[in-house]
Image (cartoon, rainbow, N blue to C red; front, side, top):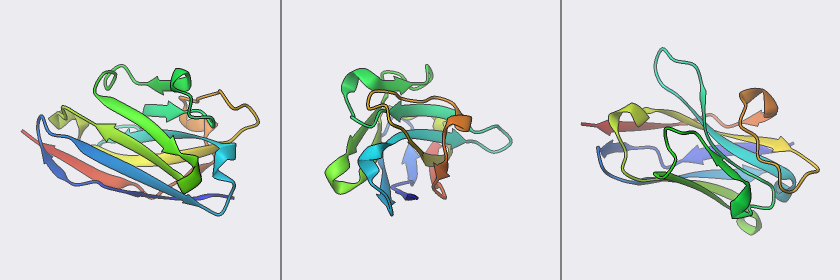
Length: 129
């Protein structure tokens, strides 16, 4: 069973950048696909980005709203996943969550909340205009 802890959330000005980190412990991290989701006040939790176990760049998915601005990556040796966020806008304001899914398939990346078994506690990103 894996535990996830997000960090890196902060108040950022519009147009700025921020990198979120997700630290995993308690499991063989390379066995898990990972996703980032976010939840703004009064809204449902939505998919942001996901990455396969292998981390192969071909198997990374992005929501249309962040495509070209955000980038997901992972370092299995360090048990870390990152979300680099560039050109941030006020509508990116949300609590960002890291999630993990154990999978036997090295090149599957998952985009639905229901796919994931483990969640972190979230980190707040606020973008001011």
